[in-house]
Image (cartoon, rainbow, N blue to C red; front, side, top):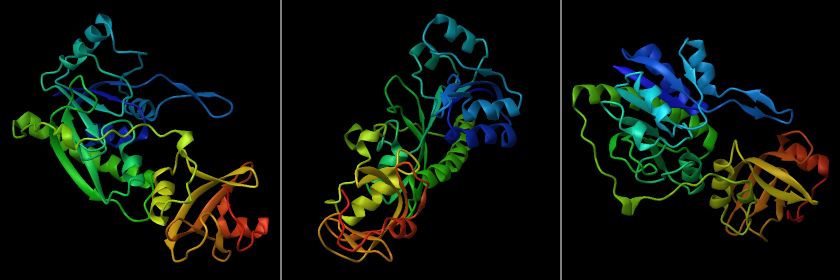
Length: 306
């Protein structure tokens, strides 16, 4: 079975590796987004999927768009039985969706129909979900609306960050992909239509959402910190500067929202309950333990974060 693989970030890499190393299928080409400038020096950097594909000697294509007859013809010439799409970041037009014999298969980081969209993993953590997973589906012209094929669930651990969950789901996605392809080929999988009434949309995170509202419950604050790690990182303000909060844990305590209840360990009051700060980074400074930061800034009990 010939496969064209479309993906961009590290979430898709375990699936590409699984296809090459553990399956009988032939990956004829990899489509990924163009190289982009990264960091303050704007160094042109290839996507993780491109790096992986080049290590295996697979042809890499990086078109700006898949629209137009020329792109459809180039993909069709590869004679794909399946197009696998994982966090590619570009819309597939109907002219491409209709090419492969078995259709275009997407691996999505949620238990559809919940958390359609660009940030399903982060939003699930921020919302305090206890269970999530990975779903394979047949792609259609809608956004994550295609018929579901196979789902696998996993618990979201109480202290787990979105980044840590991201890594686990990327591995689970590879297993779901191999299982899906085998069942497609054998004709043993039955597509299931999504219940649109049970769906919700997981929009991309923005830096504007980073500010912590200390009037929320300790659980909600903790979930936000976890869900925004490793990007864009939850923040509060201290003496007019942004203080990034990387890790917290829920603890005992009550008081005025955002007030320092304890210095050793650093505990901050929320609207209901309190959180202990574990790792922080003040604007212009290095990332460090919250205790080290409190000690260096001579923060005292009763001080209030902005």
